[in-house]
Amino acid sequence: MVPQQENGWKLEVLHNIKFTRARGNTDVATPSADEPTYCNVHYSKAQRPGSKQPAASNRRSGVTSERVALLVLSVLLAAAVTALGVTHEACPRCEDGWEPHGGKCYFFSSVTSSWDQGRRQCILMRGDLVVINNREEQRFLVSRLRGKMDTLEDRFWIGLTDSKKEGEWLWVDDTRLDTSLTFWRLKEPDDWKGPNPDEEAYPDGEDCVRMGVEDLKSWSDGSCESHHKSICEKPEKA
Image (tube, rainbow, N blue to C red; front, side, top):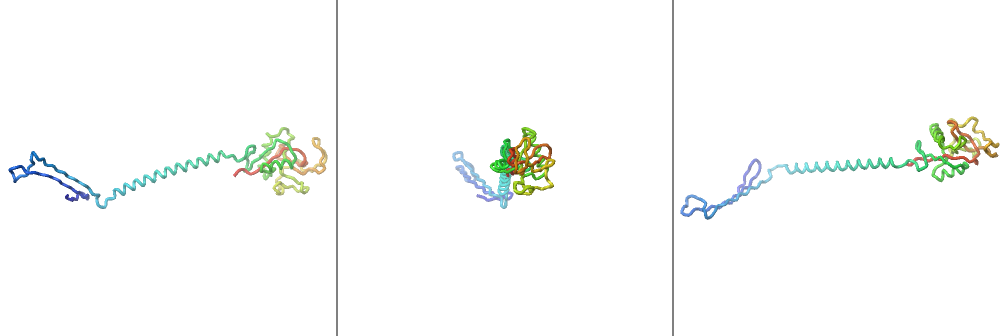
C-alpha cells in the first residue's frame, strides 16, 4: 500500500501483482502462457483534512426541516383561526325568540298580563322588564313594536314604576328615572283613578308604565293590574 496525496485527498493504493518468469530466461520477467499474471489495484480515499462538506449537507437538511415545520405550523394556525371565526359567527348572541340590539337581547311577549306577572315571566327567562337608558334604545323599541301590535291600542309594560312611593319613579334595577331622559305622552303621568272607557276603575291609581307606538314619546302610566304585553331584556351572551 502506497499512501499518496492528491489535491488534499489522501489516496491509499494497494497493488497485488503476480508475475512468473518464462522458462529458460532469467533476465526478463515475462508472463507465462500457462500461468497468467493478474493485478489487483485498490484505491481508497480519505476525507480531505479540514473538509466541511458533510456539515454543510447536515445544515441544508436542517434548514429544510425547519421550513417544513414552519409550513405545517402555519397551516395549522390558519385552520385554527378559521375554525374560531366560523364558531364565532355560528354562535347566536341571543336565544331563540330574543332580538339582539346594542349588546342586549329583547323579548316581546305576545300574551297579556299584569305588570307583576309580566315581570315574573321575564325573570323566569333570566331577564327583567326593560330599562330604557337612552333615546336610541327608545327609538329601537318603538320601531320593533310597530310589527308586533295587534291593534293601535296595544301597550307593552316596561320596567318603570312608582308603586313604592307616589311620584318617585324607579326602574326595576332600582335606578332613579332621569327626568331629562323621559318619553311621556302629553299630560302623562297623571295617576288617573277613575274608570276609562276600556278599563274598570282602580282606586290605587296608576303606578306602572307601559308604552305604545304613537311616536317617540309613547309612555303612559296605568294600573299595575291592567293586562298588557311586556318587553323583557337581558345582556347578550358573552
